[in-house]
Each structure stands twice: as structure tokens, then as C-alpha cells.
Image 1 (cartoon, one colour):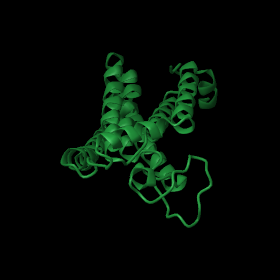
Image 2 (cartoon, helix red, strand yellow):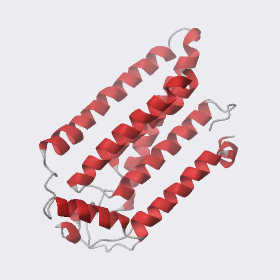
Image 3 (cartoon, one colour):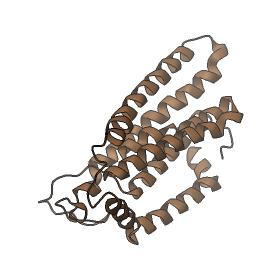
Length: 230
């Protein structure tokens, strides 16, 4: 059922094509290196904002704690509606979808980070580090230490909330684009702040966004199998 829905979903395939086009431009035609190099030069050929109070303390550490609070709140609300009277069953299902989407997005991004072995910009000799730049599918020497920078983990605590689009579409359709805006807004904020610190290339963020969108789509299609999701 879900597989058939994906095959029929024109928006999904369009987003997939856009993703691969972006990755080609960023990864194989040098877009990542050019953008990171431009930021690095603006910061005086150093990652000046790596430990800045705004990017590190507020947007990185503070953003992470904000996400913890938000996820815990969602979990409490989900449990509340799940064990309430049957009249809340529609709300329970929507909140369950949000909870599952967040968990799947976080776990998927974290797992991929653990196996892709891709360096952060700040680790590369091009940007003041001590490791060579390797493309996504290049063979990595065993002499190099493991790297955990692809896809972007911190951006996922923003982009995972695109699941709000799917939740609101089921219980409050007029709010669905507000939900999408929340996820996109925080994802862009956290993602760009990490790029300013030298923690990620743009392609890392783009991949995280697609993972979060796909995870949310699949979860809500499983919960609402009979609906024509766009």
C-alpha cells in the first residue's frame, strides 16, 4: 500500500529529482567547496564562529535543549490522547504520527552519520584541518580516523518538524503550511549556523531535509493508508 502510494506520488518523485540535482551540483560540481570556501574566507580564513556564543552556545547547545523539551512535550501529549476516551482517537493517531516521524527522522540521520564516514569542513586541510577532502563515494584510507558529519545531525532537530505539515493536514488542514514553515525555518536556522561554524557542507543539510520529509511521509501514509496523500 505504502509502496504503491509512493509510486503514484508525483510530488515525491519531483522532490527526489530535485534532491539528486542539488547533490550533483553540490557534491560533484564543487558547490559544497565553493560555498564553504566563501564562508571560510569571510571569517578570515578560520572558523571564527566555531565557538562563538551565538552559533555554539545559543543555536547549537540551546537549540538542542529546546528540541529535547519540544519532543518531551509531544510525547506527553501523545500519551495523553492515546489513553483518553475514544472521542480523541483521531487526535491520538495524528500525534502518534508526529512522535513516530520525529523518532524515525532522528534515528535515520544518526545511523547514517555513524556509517558514512564523511568529514566536517573544519577537519579538512582545505579549511585549516589535517585531512584530505574526499567525495561522498570515494574510498577512504584506513589510516584516517572515523568521521561522523554526513548527513547533518543538528539540522535534523529542525527539519524533523516538517512532520507538523502532515499532522496538521489530518487534524487542522489550514495550519499545515505553518507546520511546514516551522520545520523548514528551524532546519535552515540550525543548518546554516552549523555551516558558519564549519561543521557541515550544504549537501549534508539537503540530505537531512530529504530524510526527514521521506520519513514523515511514510509514517503518515502507514497511519492513513486509505487517503490520497500529496
